[in-house]
Length: 104
Image (cartoon, rainbow, N blue to C red; front, top):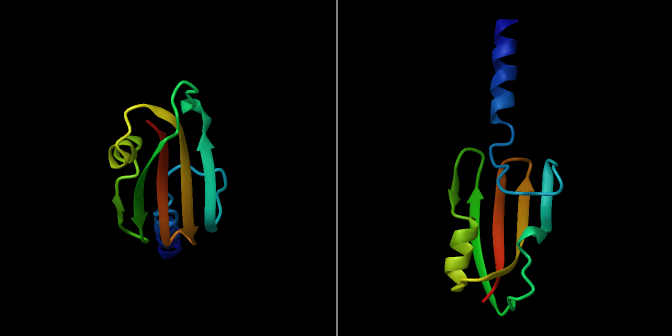
């Protein structure tokens, strides 16, 4: 019984190791979900430039910088019009989160 409890605890801790970034849908298989972040919309800024930043991972390790700041730097953006997110996840084993920033 003790071994079963330990195994269940380890399984609970290991599940979702690659659940990175924002997503509107939580599932074991998320192939391509995109969601806008409307809190950043600034109509005085034109969405002329696009900046992208991605973090990817496997069951144990996640690497990359999918922050808003990294996406802005990658696109040379100083003023943000809006932000989009793209999430992929396969059984919690392989996953990625991409932040897409539009602005000037």
